[in-house]
Every structure is written in C-alpha cells, then in structure tokens.
Image (tube, rainbow, N blue to C red; front, side, top):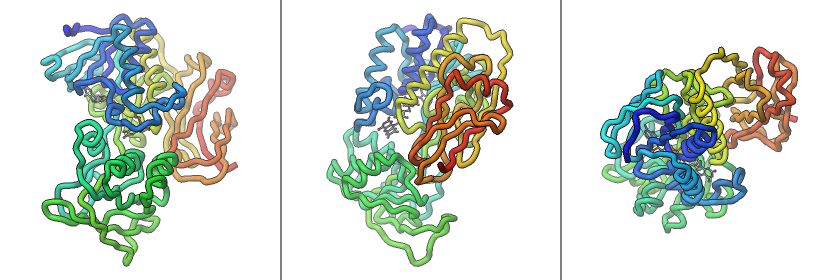
Length: 425
Ligand SMILES: Cc1cc2nc3c(=O)[nH]c(=O)nc-3n(C[C@H](O)[C@H](O)[C@H](O)COP(=O)(O)OP(=O)(O)OC[C@H]3O[C@@H](n4cnc5c(N)ncnc54)[C@H](O)[C@@H]3O)c2cc1C
C-alpha cells in the first residue's frame, strides 16, 4: 500500500482504543485516517485474549477478545481507513511529525493534523520488582505466557506458581489448568485482590486454585530451569514474617505484577505525564498537554474493561477529527480534577470549561484501599457537593465511574477545582 505523507488523523496502535479512535475520526469528518501498527495484524492485545468477557457493557454481548476486535476491524476497513502494519513508530515531534520504520513501510515520515496515541501498555518484569534468587529459565510475564499458549501453541511449563492477583495472572491460572497444567497457587503481596472479583470467582475459585493474600516470592530456586520458589507471608509494610517461609516446587513462575502505560513516544512528543497513572494528563476530550495530540486506552491509564477503552477511543478520535478541521484559535480554560479521600487518581485530570454542557462526562477513578461497605462516590466543587452516586463497595482492582451530566455544569463552571472522593455511606 502507498502511504501518503500527510493525513488528517494518524492513530498509533490498533488495539480497541486505536480502532475506535480511527472510526470516530472518520465518522466526524476527518478525510484521511491512518492507523500505524507495529504488529502484522490489527487488534492489539485482544488477539491473544481468547477468553470471553469482552463487550458486556457497550455491545451487551459477552464476546471473546478476537471477536470483539474483529467487529471494529471490519468497520474500520469498511470505511476506508488506511493501515500501515509491521511498522513501528519511532518518534513523534510536538509539531506532529511521525517517523516510523519496519518491513511494512521501510522508513516513513508522515505529517498529521492530529494524532491519537493508542500504544496500550506493557507488563512489569522481574527486574522491576527486584525478585531475588538465581536466574533460571522458566520465569515469564503472564501476558507472554498467554501469547505462547493462545497464539503460538506452546506450553511454557507444567507446574506453575503465579505471582500477583492481577487479571492476566488469574485468567492464565484458569487457561493453564484447562490445558492440563497444575497451578499450585496465586500469591498476592497486598492483603486484598488486585484484579476483578469476577475473575477471582471464575478463574480461581471455580478451578480450585488457592489464592494466598499477603504473600510473595522470597527467592527463586533452580540453576538451568526454575525448580521451586520460596514463598513468605508479609506484614502490612511488606516485611517478611519470619518462620512463614515455604518451598513450593514448580517449573514455571508467572508474573502478573502490574502494567505500565507505554509512553516513550508521548514523552518524545513533549506530552506531560501523570506520575500516578504513568500516562498523559488529558482533559475530557482526551487531548494531552500538546495541542493536537490526543490519547486513549491503556496508554492513558490501565483499564479493567475493554468497553471503556473503546469509549475513550471514540471520544479521542472525534476530538482529533474536530481539531484537524480547524486551527485552534481559542485559549483553553481548564478546571483541574483532584483526587480526594481514598482516591488514587481520576481520569481525565482536567475539564475543558468551554466544552462543559455538550454531553455527559465520565470520570474514572481507582481507590487506594478497599472499603467493603456501601460507599458514596462524590464530586465537590470548592467544597460544595455537585453530585454523588452510591456503590455497594470500592476495591482497588475495580475501576469506579462517576458521570457528570449537563445539569451539573453550572456549579462546576464556576469552580477553581473539582475534587472526587470515595467515602463510607
Ligand atoms: C490478558 C488480558 C485479559 C483481559 N481480559 C479482559 C476481559 O475479560 N474483559 C475486558 O473487557 N477487558 C479485558 N482486558 C482489558 C482490555 O483488553 C484492554 O484494556 C484493552 O485491550 C486495551 O486496549 P488498547 O487499545 O489501549 O491497547 P492494546 O490492545 O494493547 O493495543 C496497543 C497497540 O499498540 C501497538 N503499538 C504499541 N507501540 C507501538 C509503536 N511504537 N508503533 C506502532 N504500534 C505500536 C501495539 O502493538 C498494540 O497493537 C484484558 C487485558 C489483558 C491484557
């Protein structure tokens, strides 16, 4: 395919965030839209997620990952959206020049009127959590093992320990059990689950895989291949509790210890990064701190459900198309969104005053600590309650959503900041 040297909107990454952004950009008047993807296929991480659970919120269907992705791929290709596969974006300038390289294009230099960053995230590795012990084969991130089993058809081992109760680890515990492996246990250093409760029930409880909270790996044992791990209980400050050590034989250790938004390109483009989320600061149109550069999906913050990624992609793509069609003449007036009581972060990090009133705005947040009792999720403008919604509980592994409606914008509009908090009812 011949790639032009100028596009209205260029989307980097073809996961659900990127696909939705490209579709929305085209639907909202962008004449030419290009998706650049480093993999040889469109679809992103969904292609290896063959379990169901995708699309429950926005499609009202419970689909496997590849089926969910295929709907968006068909729609994007049917609309004439161009794609450049097998091409890695290496650099983006603040002036929206994109440099990409790969078998798909050789070396390409493309100018975009607007860009949507949708590079997803990557997994935290053994080095990043400083896991002591020898360095034998058999230590994998859960996502790598998932790709092996679901896409490439290899089993990474037969007797597993999983470190971390994130969703990918729990999903892999079930997957490996179904493939005939023995999953000895899942260890979680926190005193609570870090993934979705539904995955705990469907992947661990249903398959008799024990979950050990407040536990971690003290040491990896083995020379050529991992032979066992030494596990230990930890106190509330993560100090090992002496005498609680246990040797658990295994030939494979899977790490499900967190995801990091993939933002090297964003930094190169001069985008301001939030140290808490690891992703760009965005406003409610998902525009970053660099005009004309938008971001959507796991690149912004790690989502638990794909539906919200697609929704964010639509917003970012629509905003990018609008940007591409007019030169920005106005000065943007932002209202900061602040994380209040028991809130770790809230996305977006700011609201654009001039867009208030154009529709509902969904605020998404994660709590710091679990509250296993009914809670209020509330937003206050200069201390005055603007809105609140009841939830049966609040858990760090499950994203919390609060919707602002146009009715509430009058109060928000005059505020110097909006603070979101989660408190016991
Ligand atoms: C194992 C697992 C299980 C999950 N299970 C569920 C579930 O049951 N239900 C649910 O609703 N959600 C689930 N999710 C969450 C959901 O799938 C993700 O939130 C969503 O897929 C993220 O989409 P994204 O577009 O942000 O990123 P991705 O899908 O990761 O896409 C990012 C794309 O960007 C490309 N890219 C990155 N850098 C570059 C570059 N420099 N140049 C070119 N291309 C680049 C990558 O190759 C990739 O294709 C799961 C996620 C995982 C990882």
